[in-house]
Length: 347
Ligand code: KG4
Ligand code: ZN
Image 1: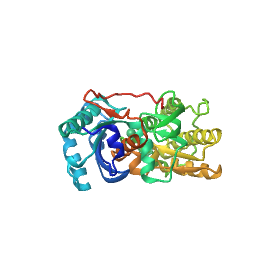
Image 2: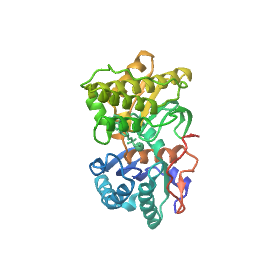
Image 3: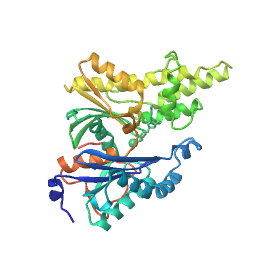
Image 4: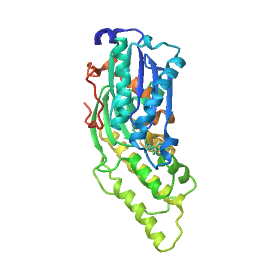
């Protein structure tokens, strides 16, 4: 099998990457950091019926989808599976059963073809999505991680290391969007629904924002105050304007997030802030970050909207960066296991 040094010295490095950590089965082919193909099969329509992701159903559908998704990605890239120099897979964080489908499948490919297996941390993948849309972005910069499972402000020191500055003390911001959407009887996933509804509303409902450290957040209290507002209006028989609640909630959380990232950039003397994760697709957050960066002489960066939510191109890109700039710790063997959580400690 190719050694790590042989792999890193290769001129044309083709990576086939797979992502199955939640409800998207995805495969991408990356050659030297450029995306040859990216296929995403989403199960949103299936889980919508239950108001959220049902882990067992997600795993079963990954099993059904993985083979055709990988084949489609290979076909679109115009390569055979044996043309891959290495295979990359998300091994955490995420739903264990869902992750295991991708990990087992990619392990099988790597060992059947005697090719290197690369393990990828999903959150690092979200950060790497920025390099796909903006090759001018270079570390160091501030990363604002806003996904369904994680919320954090990090200093991205290099392509392979970051320092955790602060994050949520309870719910993740995507989780808060999804829970507030439920209270407003909006379908899963709540983030895009809140964004759509908020466009028709005004920021007129008082949402108390908890006082935390400069880079720490608490979303649970915000969610509870929305629930309380809706319930007490219902009890008084007063109508609520859902669009105003959505606009006010969205404004409160995006304000908190942007403020923390801009404060971090100024404190650490960094000029760039990059968004990472599903909530990064939110237009209000993108606009607020851009405005605030412009007002403070900073530069905002975001992946394209489709690369903010889960995909395999970002996993392939992260694997590529690990190979080009890392220490070889991304190399895995047949003992690789899925991990439901990986601490956001950075390195
Ligand atoms: O990063 P992601 O795709 O999966 C995780 O790694 O968790 O994030 C999914 C989260 C969901 O909570 C979803 O509601 C939220 O991202 N999301 C959004 C938007 N699109 C997806 N939140 C706000 N506005 C959006 N447009
Ligand atoms: Zn994700």
